[in-house]
Image (cartoon, rainbow, N blue to C red; front, top):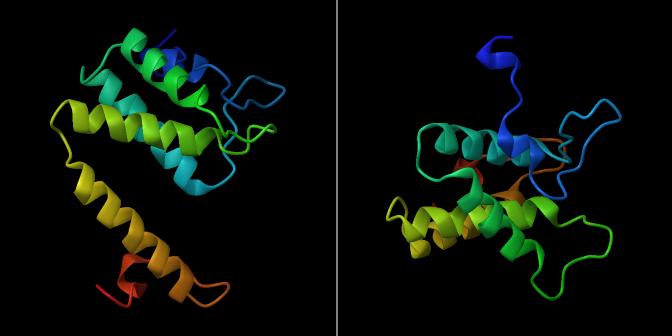
Length: 123
């Protein structure tokens, strides 16, 4: 079996939505991108599997989560963001500013058009 055929430990993350075949299921493209970034950073050694599992589990057990698990990838992104900040890879205020910029871009984008940061009226 090649390295590409060996499932990532991250694909075994607690609560990860999966298809009947066992493949991860992503509700939106951004969730798949967050998953891919996490896999890449794990493979590059930024964090271990146990560190990731603990960070994600911490987010998944915060009060106020949706009962249907619809916020799973929001928790995933929060866990990844916290890890990036704690390791000095990213700045928390820069992440928040970028998040706000994406939100403004989404609100300013006409229906049916791709959301791009260039659509943020404050950029």
